[in-house]
Amino acid sequence: MTYCINSECPNPKNPAAARECLACGSELLLRDRYRVSGTLGQGGFGTTFLAHDEGLPGCPPCVIKQLRPTAEAPHIMQMARDLFAREAKILGKIGNHPQLPRLLDYFEARTDFFLVQEYIHGATLQKEVKTRGAFSEAGVKQFLSEILPVMQYIHRNQVIHRDIKPANLIRRDADKQLVLIDFGAVKDKVNPVKASEESGHTALTAYAVGTPGYAPPEQMAMRPVYASDIYAIGVTCLYLLTAKSPKEMSYDPQTGEILWQEHVQVSEHFAGVLSQMLEISVRHRYSSADAILRDLDLEPYLDSLAQNMAIPTATPKDNDPISQPNLNSDEAATILGLDDSQAGGSPSARMAAAIRARRERQNTKPSPVSPRRSSSNLLSSNSSQSGPFSGQGKKITPEAVQRAYERGHRDFSLQPLAKLNLQKINLSGASFASAQLNDCNLQSADLSNVNLTKADLRQCNLKNAKLSNAYMGEANLENSDLRGANLNRSNLVGANLRGANLCGADLTGANLTEAQLSTTKTNWSTIYPNGRRGLR
Image 1 (cartoon, rainbow, N blue to C red):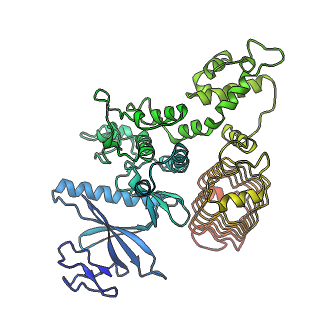
Image 2: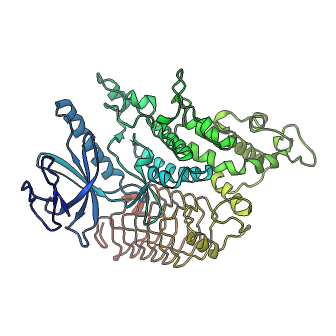
Image 3: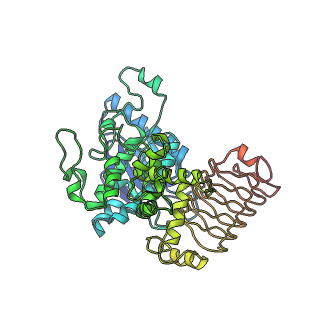
């Protein structure tokens, strides 16, 4: 079936091959290539359609957004045009991420504006909860481990989404990755000094947009900040835990806070994390996704860390907090003379700082990996911990990785996987954020659509590996072998490529700088981001 998008058409349904509407005579092929097959949704600014691109082999599906505000007042039209143009601009800027839809086209026709983007086939988290019921605490933590790195990426690009909610999060069928959609309310951060001087406008936005209940007070007051997205993620966590929308929960009439504690049963530590995400005051709310990830990463090891700190040494010393039993993180930090900037704001961060300080005092050589990676080593050595390698003991084998992936595990973040032989393995769509993969053999492996944010890939054999649409922001690829690798549309922003061998690699559409390329080895068969071979 071909669907006519003329809002005044009396019968929009037409035969599949029709080029003109049988009822109103309107042309049915937009831009002479997009055939609309039905509607996906309708809002105040227009309609979203499902279409197929007949200009490409196989006529792949796509999503078309049509700008058509219900109100015709000049200021409403201008606001709609601004938001629509902004969505296209931002999607073009940040759409090269495996968990964000790509912008495919943007045009004006019949006095209407159209935006074409990648179609994400799957179910929203809202539908998932309605079908399967509320999530467990572990399930919500898994959700956070997937969405928070996306928030890091978006916020690093100076973008505020402003409409995060279960209905805008889709679990993609192809690889089970979570994809954040609908950037219609997005805001690119502007110069706060200049904007604040404009009468009637705030530092960040001119319009109050977002979904009531999910949007925090400062956003509804037209003053969104990055932490506004953190609040929306917190409310989404409540929905996942309770299957209740924020409108179904009571509020404190004095503060406006959601009274959610009576609806959920979670650990004390996770309740504290949720509370800080849901703070009404921006000053007391988490300011970044990084801070939440730090707290969640250390959480599974708080008990073991506390036990280690409670074990007295042979000769306890007053100035060694690690040797004193039943000492909490604040007391440990105080004895060691750590200020807030050194110890961090959370108990887990202060505990970790105390341990690092003790190591320095004992003149030991700490591991060169970060605290987050150190905590992942604890995961692999403690068989009681949950995760993809639960029960594997201290050594993680290639067979264990393959087995975990085949059983549906996709999150290998922080895992110590150095020097493993994973040749020709299929790990597409998995997350290896901050994982240790140095000296690994991943020759001819399928790593398409993987998340390798901040992963350690030094001296890794990635010869002929499939890395299309991979996100490798800030990954360390120093001296890695990428000969013949497929890096189509990969994102290498901030990655260390010093000494990497890119001879014969295909970098078509990849996101990286000329400065990064200048540190690599290339030859006549290298295909550069502009699609040219052997030329820059």
